Image (cartoon, rainbow, N blue to C red; front, side, top):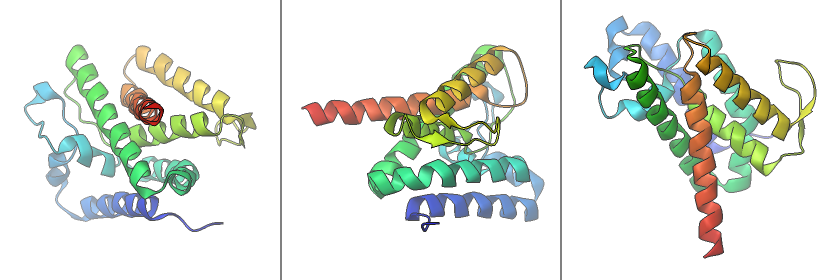
Length: 193
């Protein structure tokens, strides 16, 4: 197993560190860092980044870190740290923006946490760079090409998001994919100039 690149490792360690810190610190303190809807009265500007370092429970943290390791490590090795970091930030901010818009439209007051928006951005990027690479997802455990895996998960997120409240920020996931797609389009456009 190759070593985990620097930005991926730092992001994973920060997520684990924040998770452990907020287990030990007073419960209300994490509210300052969660992404609160604009209409809640609890929204603060830094939350559009800090929410990505927080996770609801151990399984949420585990699966996000697994995906970050699986897809992020290779993307960082291919792109280098700077470009990879730009994509992570674009995915995180786009996920936050879409989630804020969605919660405003439906009148939700629930906060959002997790690196899933960034992870879905990495997933889309992986599928675009390596469309024919065969991967074995945990769910469903069927080998498939990366492009089909990305399309399947994107479609599922859209269906579940439109299907009603599940307690999962499906539109934040889609926002992360949108942010990654826009960033990759920008890179491709700037190469043509």
